[in-house]
Image (cartoon, rainbow, N blue to C red; front, side, top):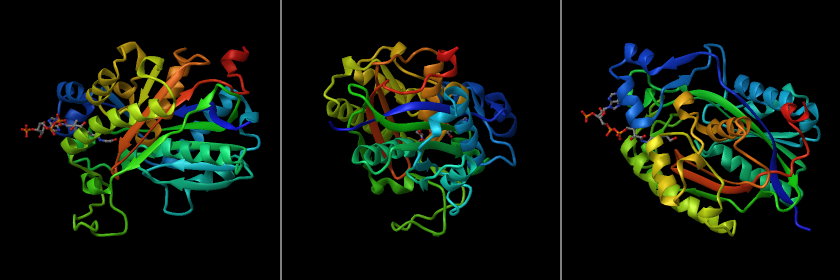
Length: 335
Ligand code: UT7
């Protein structure tokens, strides 16, 4: 029988420090009204001065262990940390996680901007279904407030920090992940950048150390790929939009989420929105949103969940998972 990969445990973390829209309006020319009406964001959580992507990744995994017990990590043979803000180019953040939790596992970071965690899940799925790994710890962790330009109101108001962790392993049919959609278009590379070692992109566009974004271009791109990639993912799962119980999109802008939801014909109660509290957490946004939805009792075994993300690259990813089939009970379920 073919092995099918699914998600069997989740954890999430957001730093304690909160910045409200009103706080931001004291340090830049913006307002709560503008931010709320254009994005849906009310607050965002911000990593401490001495708190980094690895620290938040540790905390998300600790949360997972608190919920499902230490055995949820037993036998993990691969760790993938999706991030746009690794602590360092090397050591890879994933190796720090491997060491922290004493895992006998390979470890690598995955750079694919905001869809990075869904990319990591697609890699984990391939590892599991090919027999290359038995259990993969996937993490999305980002400290984007450390790379935003705090003098640029067009971008600084959008992002927050956080981390989400998920175990991917084989589950029994009918549970698990359907074939996923993974895409990129480097033709739009200049629309969303954070500098590295190069001074410019191959196209000649200058690279800045801090985050830069052409918001309108990314908006148009996002609305387009959220539509095409979700339909493609639903089709790959052999389903129609009516079969989707819960839509868990990348948390960037409620206007983008609403456009996608409406195109799919889904009612508002079938979408998970957490960006009012957290802003855009990049790679962490979907695993954090899944953890919240589970906590809120919005996910039942057998539910079909549609996940989709877009971001720098430009890039995108989408997939449908039939929830359930996990071996672990959450602390709440066991109580
Ligand atoms: O994970 C992927 C990350 N990226 C995204 O998802 C971004 C996608 N894009 C967006 O979400 C939207 O384009 C933004 C929220 C970034 C911007 O919204 P918009 O409706 O496209 O606004 P705009 O850029 O067209 O700007 C409208 C006005 C401008 O003023 P003028 O030129 O009309 O006088 C801006 O200068 O709003 C001004 N503005 C602001 N005003 C107050 C831009 N940022 C702010 C701000 N506060 N923070």
